Image (cartoon, rainbow, N blue to C red; front, side, top):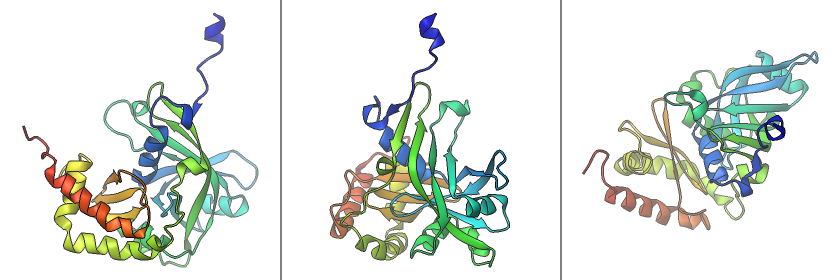
Length: 258
């Protein structure tokens, strides 16, 4: 009875988890387009949760496009502390699928690249992104809590959630050109990235972004993530890695093939 009274064990730190907690957390973070944002009510009341669309910065920090007329925006302006629940879901029991809670502080940002990365992930948001009452926010993570399904839980530090950009400052400036080049000149390879490397169904797949650890793809409302074999060693490593991925995708069997 004493063992039962203690309740479930606390989540392990990601480094001690018996599964790839960091890899799974980053996959959820990079691949989920909407989440529940919890802010603190300005009058000291209960936490306030609302649905928001989400993209990620080059380092993986969540990006939000919020209206200053919304309650959650007013809450953040009074107290930037918040949490964001990301749950991509799937068939069957929703609690059987991975979900990630990111805690931290969120503030307005006009940093270069944020607008482009968000609109690449949410093209329809271009209709209202420039309205005067809308602005982009960047959530600076302080910690993460991953539930990877039954008996798979872990806590993560900010460093484990985010992608190291050291030595890759130039990637931010070249990302837009590289993404456009792949979509315009190598659409066949992009489609194979999604179907043969990420296991997704065929569709109008295109790249929406790339970072030192992988590429993000979109087809309608569907997303896919393809991780690089290892973190890019420098900006010059991007092209060889993409060429190698394209070769790998072409060599992989098509879905349903014998």
